[in-house]
Image 1 (cartoon, one colour):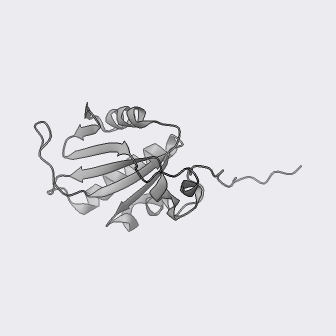
Image 2 (image 1 turned 30 degrees about the vertical axis):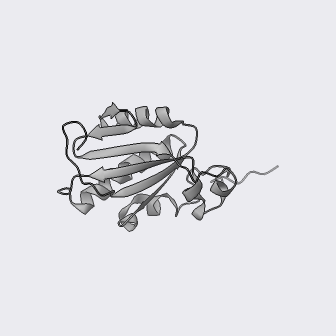
Length: 144
């Protein structure tokens, strides 16, 4: 239990994050996006809690390698849903968070049991998504 809201003790998903955002900036951005409140590194919103922290495994060189480099992104978000929330709703909610991060040019990859239900395979399946150290392919051919 955090504050006055109870959620599962088991982590539901982990999102690895890297890009033009630091720890406090990511916490603030997520709190605003999900209409939650901040409690240290936690964002608390309705029946979901997000723990945002630095990744002890972060590696500037290894993070740029697709597809497994996401394990070395600089930050992560642990997602804890209420056990009563159906998996389809969890996937929809998490998909909206991923789309929000990608739109802000933040690399984000989700690891969970329902990755197939997330947009763009949870962030690992689309080479046009933001990724640290890699410029996405252009949709336009440039002629010199």
